[in-house]
Image (cartoon, rainbow, N blue to C red; front, side, top):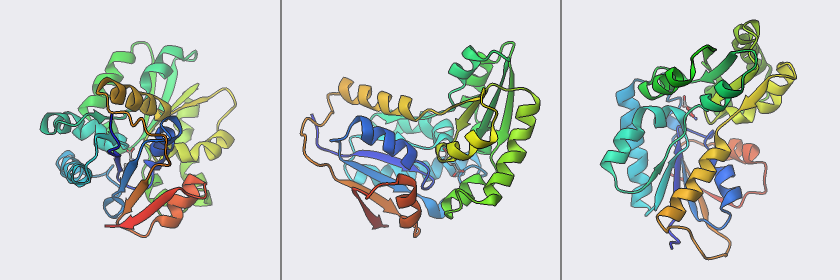
Amino acid sequence: MSIQPIGIFDSGVGGTSIWKEIHALLPYENSIYLADSINAPYGPKGKDKIIALSIKNTEFLLEKNCKLIAVACNTASTNAITLLRKKYSVPFIGIEPAIKPAALNTKTKAIGILATKGTLTSALFHNTSNLYSNGITIIEQIGEGIVQLIESGKLGSTEMETLLKSYLKPMLEANIDYLVLGCTHYPYLIPMLTKLLPKHVKIIDSGLAVAKQTQSVLEQHQLLNIETVKPRNAFYINLKTTEVMQSLLGQKSEVDYLEF
Ligand code: DGL
């Protein structure tokens, strides 16, 4: 049993959507969140660069004595998690687009996936997508520009609405009934997406599944914190993103922001 923190990293502020789910399920766990906003977006970068940044983030969290690392970034997970698991001995939790539930439940036999270029071009994504694509049309869409708008506090802007409308158009033309969100920044778009999508289109993201997986891996390794005192949640930022994070987290913030 361990009071060591859970480490979580993302290319920026989006992985807080995963931190929220983990914190809700495991409220007594200490946590360290690393937002690498200075290097965001990861999506357009090549695999080698994404791996190098993932290693740097992992080593930062390991130096801070984290007992498990949740890679709260689809782009980093789909490109780097196999290597990270080989290289380091701590358990890793990854995230990838939840194609399976969408593919198994679609009635219109068409599903949409919104993710970064890095995720959609990864071998891991291709393998999963091939497993479930039988008899189904999968409309893949790169969410070019979305991460940058969220990072700069323009979540609810008209620019964002225009961008989303253009990305949803081919999906709606293909009559999708599921939209899979394949980037941890995107759950924050759900209010806007709900407005733009017809009622029968369901939106799926992987946040809760990641939190449950974190809980079960901590249990397996006997690493859960059994103390029930208020935890310390430290958020490391390398750009001035405190306000953006606070507005995304929508709470009086039980979080300390630290620059690195
Ligand atoms: N949150 C990251 C993801 O889940 C965003 C990647 C990016 O920075 O482009 O893919």
